[in-house]
Amino acid sequence: MAHVAIAVARGKEGWTATEVSLADVADLDDVADQLRDINPDADVSLLFVEADDAYLVIVRLDATDDLRVFGTDSAFARESRLGGLLLDEVTGPAVAIEDALAAAESDEPRPTGGPDAEPVGDADLLADLGVSSDLLLEICTREGMLPADMTSELAQLIGCGDEVEELREA
Image (cartoon, rainbow, N blue to C red; front, side, top):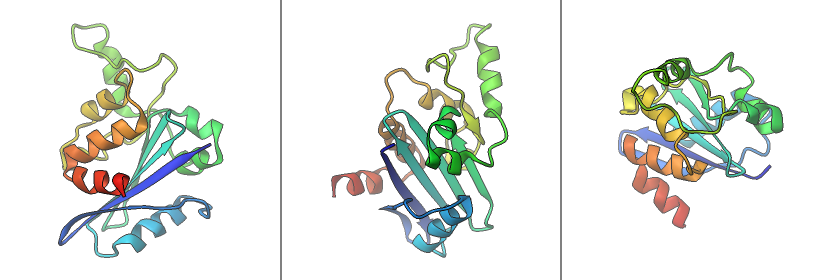
């Protein structure tokens, strides 16, 4: 399964972005170590893993070593070693997805992703950066969105869009 992994870290001088290799990681702790190595003084580090134009996983590491994970579809864990590694500790569906499904019975818009998509993990992991769980789920289930599109939009919303775009253009 082909993938791209983009790490962004916010330190004293703002955001930095770098592409990382996940070829040698054995578990989520190894992923956290790579995020720490990018900028040891970062107050927040994010890893966007885009796989096969179908899946996006976001890993967040705070300065307190709090590690949080969100995935656009639990199927990624079943379909690849990397997906299983990244989503191994995720215990259930994204909490907000239940609210989104309940909204389907009301006049509120509901997720438009495929009927089998099951977002998992912590949908609030970007909330303090300006992306609520509802907005994250809306972006990740929007019709026609590829993982690279999701990463770009989320990066713009949290303030590191220019750094991610420069990395992609390099």
